Image 1 (cartoon, rainbow, N blue to C red):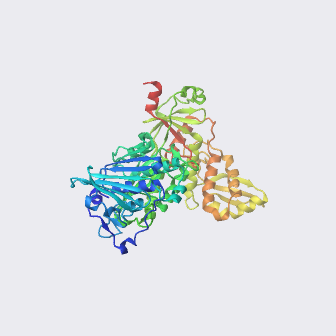
Image 2 (image 1 turned 135 degrees about the vertical axis):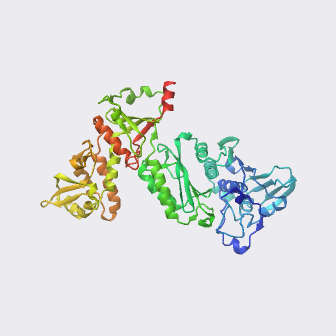
Image 3 (image 1 turned 90 degrees about the vertical axis):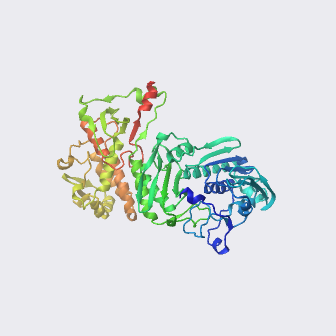
Length: 576
């Protein structure tokens, strides 16, 4: 929403009962972070460019929020503390909400459980006004000198509600919740300068630059180069953009996933679930990225009146938005090489001190590999028969040969179908499957499913089958018509055992999941091994095939394939 829309001055008024009853019940002030959220959202709605938060005793002693927004006219300050009083609803229209808060419950709810002091002035007023409320009643009202903006001081939170005070968590937990709340609001409003002090100690400072990469770096203490902007996508009247951290920077929970809808921090479940499904195969199990996804839509396409705390919203075309966002994130993560950080003592590391680089041909020009999804790479050789060493325009690349081949095979398997003959290989010599009776019975039940994936088996005796076709598996199935210059580097003998293992653990009602597990298992078991020497054609063919996959930076298990050593890291190590 534009600043002019948000700050157009409208008088505070008490909402009609019929309108107030249509608004989802306001958030109960249940902990200090609830107070902080309400007060900072008020400051953001008032077009503040700077917000300062000071906390003592985890918020139970004192919470002070100072902003430089448009302020509250002196004659309206008492009205701001009445229930259902707000200036944020234009024409009583709940369909086009353009502010973070709109119910008018924050200040009276806080005043009911704490001592509340308000000081505010506007640019038009020559002097401000101070109100102090205890138990919801005004006990002090006087004029005061105050710059344009508002200061809110909350003291002795829950002192008059001992049950709620006793239910509060330990102070360090409450303090952490406050910091997390401000982080979310700062990410949603990167144009605002936030300062947070806990017991006099600075714990958060943002610059208010307006740049999402910058505020994410400031909020999480990450180097800016470890953050990458997500490609902006526009469709219909919606726009999707955002920032995601390097794939090597992950967290064990989803608390670092930020969905911003028209500058409002939200948690739309459908969008979150679709995004998580997209990145789950690209990261280690149980790990989640640091991510801020910003969605901009017309206000009438966003229903923010479905959750008391406004943490969830309902979007028009939510499934379409989620799918597009998930695809952009998957592509960004899947093609981002992880940055390798050299330690100061790296020269003593056993892996480095015993490294041997295999050089097979002196010709440098033959080693250039150009692909659509990787930068141009000059293949330098093989390190310890495990890693491919390459030089790119932005540094050195270390490529795990096993995981690279895994990714190539996995995507081939996922793309193969019985209806696409070009993806299938008719074996010159069928593979024989000699099975136990139980294995034969299971395989018989899955012959059609396997054929749909390109594995055509036929019976050849009581417990014996012949495998006549497979999907094209570069480096594993190398029949002349399909080899395409890719040498036989994989483990063809592991193909049948992997198929049988997949059949042993399959559940008939879980066929879609089984297909993915089968593809991962086959890719892992048949890919080139670590410790296996490769000649230059093999190295180049493997990197070429990797660069043609959709997600060349991450293996099917979510582990990194590429590590990049940038020029700055080399310069630091060599003191250039």
